Structures are given as structure tokens and as C-alpha cells.
Image (tube, rainbow, N blue to C red; front, top):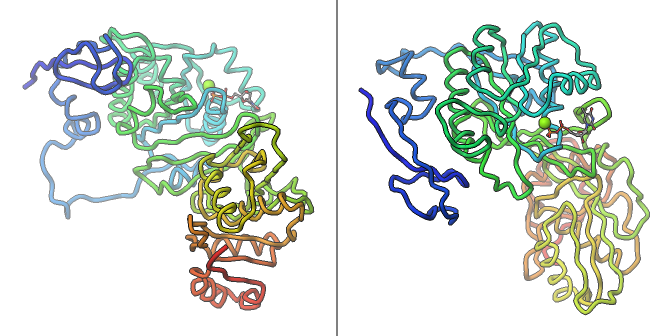
Length: 456
Ligand code: TYD
Ligand code: MG
């Protein structure tokens, strides 16, 4: 039994209302609500539900449902397989978000190669580039596979027809913003088009067991009405992130129905594609100048992995009425707070200095565990005294100047020891955990090189 529903979808943000309004209640834009008539009842239950309805209409006893394990295809690309949870699950839909130019098409073409060279065919559909352009990129990446099909087109109806005939193991849509589907009047790239195209792709994937990869561009602010409205429809959501002036890239897992979202992949963009980084700490510290004042290494967690990164601070006497403060790879407001705490609690005045803070190599530090290290880097450059090369400091700094414990201290220390760090300044609150960790890892000798503090 199908019912007819009318609803209104904002072409700017994708919000839905049941009544027409002049102004979108969610984003506040005027005249953006478009009428949509829905006739299919199962569709309103969501794509994954409707797919299940077709195959399995009767309730089953939980005990009678048998699980054969996900059928997965291993790519033999560690930095992609791991975030996926151990390869691509057949019939899964994976959304790849990221800023334009960050490397999504490059990485996906490399994945196509990894599949095709194992005899799994792929259909790569591009609405952004011609076959020749894709071919040129493929040559740069040394991809030349018999099992890799390229299709330049923007019609989802046409693409699904081709996929139906070809029956590849994987279908790639690059990008969802350049696709359209019949029956939707909104322009290409509008939330209504993006959503209906994706919903058709999800139904296709579940019905045929063909994996689908969807590329979606996101602006720097991440607020483009695009990939964000799709996150709930797909199985896996990845964001490829990085600073385009650096070669370093992080593949972050935002959602994964088949694995942990704590996993991430690390890459360098080279002349022939993205290369997985096997030893991230070694990569991040490769250009370090130990003896410079203002340089300090901190162990950060990138997903489940500790990564050692160099923080660089610079202060100079300011000629401006309001001194300049710039933070690259680090939260600006957090830096301001640390400067205020240092000024008030340790009486080191920064208020007439320009202050610059930089995380070397394009890494983004998102953790308060780096606070103590950053504070030391700031003091070091202010006093023009270099810090000992083998010193590492970990700890969160509170507004009263207290040094608070950090999470996952064990793995961080282990990585630091591996990279030959031999002096540690740590929060008193971590003492017990660190002692236990050192004992159980045969590192009791290290305890002599540690100083635990409660306050700045
Ligand atoms: P691309 O994959 O086209 O980005 P997206 O699909 O996310 O928009 O990557 C574009 C950038 O990557 C471009 O500036 C050139 C650079 N690049 C390399 O550095 N090495 C390579 O091997 C390739 C193919 C691209
Ligand atoms: Mg692209």
C-alpha cells in the first residue's frame, strides 16, 4: 500500500518541513523550500530498511540468524584496510568527504588499482573529468588494469544501467555533487539531488552486493550542504584531511558500521599518488632542529596510534598596539589560554609580544595533552634557551596552572622511548599508571628519568 506524501526540502541545507514556508526554519534562507511528492511507502522508511523489507519480510528469531562474517576484500593497502576495519565489505556504501584538491580521486583510483590487480573489476564513474583526464591521472599513478572501467557521465540512471550490465565488484561515483537522477527537479549538487542519488546508490548496493564508493566535496568550514546530510544513509564515512601546502594527509573515520572509528590512515602525497606512512613519528620528526629555542616534541594520539610531532613557538617584541597571534595546526583559542596562564601563574609576560605557534609537517594537534609541551616551547623561545633534545613533556594545563593527567600515557611513552627520548616531565596524576606501565613493560629503568609535577 503506497501513500502520497508531500513535503518541502530546503535546497540550501536539506531541512525538511511538512508545510511550505517562505523561509527555511533551519538555515534561515528565503525561498529555498521545494515541494517533493513521495509515493513509495517503503522509501520513507529509509533505504536500508526498504532493502531488508524486500529480502526478509518476516521477523526472525535472533537465535536463528546466522552470521557468516562479513565478506570482505582486502586491498593490501594498510592505511586504508585498517580504517575500513579489515578491507571493503561487499555491498557496503562508503562516503569519502574532503576539500577539493586534497586527494580523494587519487586515493580512490589507487584503491581501484588494488582491487583490479586482484581480479576484482571496478567501474569508476566521473562527472568531473573526461575519460582522457582520468587516464592521464591513472598513468601518473601507474594504474593500467584490464579490470578497471572508466565512465564519464553524470546520470545516475545511466550509471546504474551500466553497472547492472557490467556487474563490477565495486562502483565509484566521483563526485556526488556532479550527479543527477531522473524525477528530481532540483539542480545538480542541490541537497535534494544529492540525497536521491545517494539513496538510489544505497539501494543498488544492498540489492546487488556491489560495493559503492561515493566522493563528496566539503568546504573548509565543512558546512556545504552535501556529504554531511548523507552520513546517516551510508555504512562508512571517511574524511580525507590535510593542509594543501603540506604533503601530509590523514584519513579519518567518522562512521563505520563494520569497524572502529578510532582508526585512521596516514599518508604522504607524492608525485605518484598517496603513500601510506609506516612510521609516522619518524616521518614527522625527519626535519627537526633539536637545538633551536622554541622547539619541543609532543606525543599525540592519532586515532589509536601515538605520533610524535614537533611544536615550534616563536615570540618577538611587537610593534603593534594589539600584538599578533597566529596558530597553525593548533587551536587558536587554546594558545591564547596557555599564554594567559603562563602570564598569570608563572609571571612570564607575553602581552607585548607577537606569538606564533606552528605544528611542523602539517599535522593537526587536537589534544590538551600537548599543553605542557607547548607551554615549555613558549617559555623556551621567550627566554631564548633551547630545551634538551631528549626531553618530552605531557600534560593538560588548567586555568589555575595545575598540570592534569593525560589519557593513553603508556603508548605515548613507549613511542617516545622508541624514538630515543630519555627525559620526561609528566603529570603527578599519571604517576601510578606510568609506574605500572613501566613495570609491566620491562622499563623500570626509565622511572629514574621521569619527573612528576602537579603545578606549573
Ligand atoms: P585529487 O585527487 O584530484 O583531489 P580531489 O579528488 O580530492 O579533488 O588531487 C589533486 C591534487 O593532488 C593536485 O593538486 C595534484 C596532486 N597530486 C599529486 O601530488 N600526486 C599525484 O600523484 C596526483 C595524481 C595528484
Ligand atoms: Mg576529484
